[in-house]
Image (tube, rainbow, N blue to C red):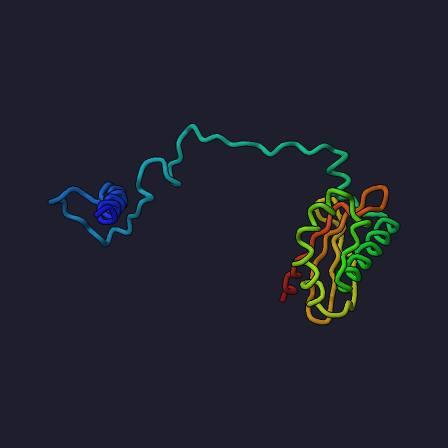
Length: 174
């Protein structure tokens, strides 16, 4: 009996919004008008006058310049070396947490049981190509036997990995 009451209450709760959108009984409806819910007040065609727009927070000029400025060849070389070492460690089955900052190592450790089989599944490393910067870190196109991936890697001034992300590479533009 309780189930029947709960089911009835749930159906009535769903029927309320539907009933609110139906015309009153006895009103003729023309279904060929092409009019939809967009005719309600304050929709996309007539937004409310009190629309609040929030401007993005300004980025400090030094941070913006660091994210958009090309990296020095030394930074790219050091980051590529760290990336290759990380991939080799992942393919061997044990990530090297000593190469990472403590914060990054803390985030990666619980995921290592998932990450290492993924890295191993990519197959042998074929090539690593620097493609620029993304969000202040170096972006690499990494090609394996069985996958093409993008890796984003950032190093701190001590040479430890602070940012480590990989994802499938987007399909080449036709």
